[in-house]
Image 1: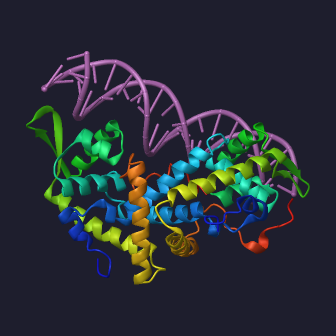
Image 2: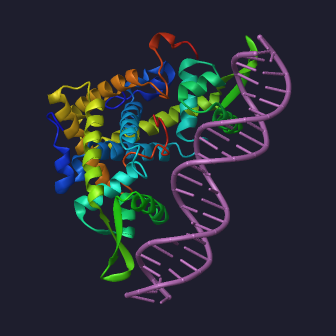
Image 3: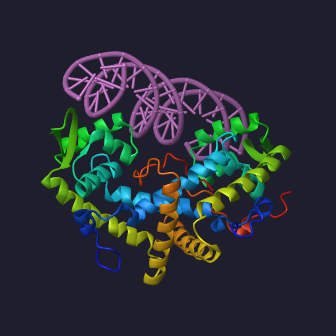
Length: 175
Length: 175
DNA sequence: TATTGTTATACTCTATAACTATA
DNA sequence: TATAGTTATAGAGTATAACAATA
């Protein structure tokens, strides 16, 4: 409570409204988007994570399960169940890796790609919905600042972020 | 970006960098703050939720368990365990409600208030840490916009709003 | 009969460990 | 021996249901 930000010890003492609290605001916005996204992805096996698998394998090409798991920040055992469901739904395929007979390469099916397109559209709607109280200019500023905070935070502690892909590693010709 | 001119199908096809994605950024920032906050609140019984109980009862006065539970968005059975731990640690007290002998009023102890002060300080440091990549002016703007989005979102869907920090169970990376 | 709070039970999600087949 | 993937098991966290005391 030393700098320009609101005095917090006073917050406890006076009972400053929670609306001024960063944690509160972040939590509300995040959960609101998470809820909207979860609703949008409701019929996808694995929900948001199933979507992540689709999006990543579609954008970056075939991936081995273990790589996919670490990239998406899920346990490899969870990845097994997740892929079971996705495969059962006909959205992805497990293919043998010619370079290593132990490994399986995950690729989206045609149906998976179509589904992904639809999901992307729904997610965009969710985004619009969440940021609905900002006008275009504000929205742009907010996105920019948030992105800067996020990129910095991700550099400091990339832990299990979902998809830290560098553009040069992306294969644009995967389809 | 995906907001004002979202060519989302292209996002899937080309693999637009995730850094531009609202869900990704929100998730990263939220989790980063949640992690910092959880670390700051590590020694508090119940973690972030224990803090919430302290903060709420201190700011708003004695509260009945059920009211507290609904306000913080936790199940009433969970509230029982939570208060058991907090009471055992000497941070809150259960007092008989003179108006209803079934109910218990939760009030922070002196020690609870002192602890709260310390926690607030630590949380402020966590905030500073997360927003470290923004200068003072940007930080103010970011807070303002975020707050507006949050208040609006909370009006639309106030549901369990106070468990600001814990719910990673919601879903990691809801891109 | 309905409500506050407690307790016991069950369910979900995730992590841990053991197993196979390869390397 | 180490690694990719699978399976089975155990743990934390949460919700559901039954209970006692009171309204």
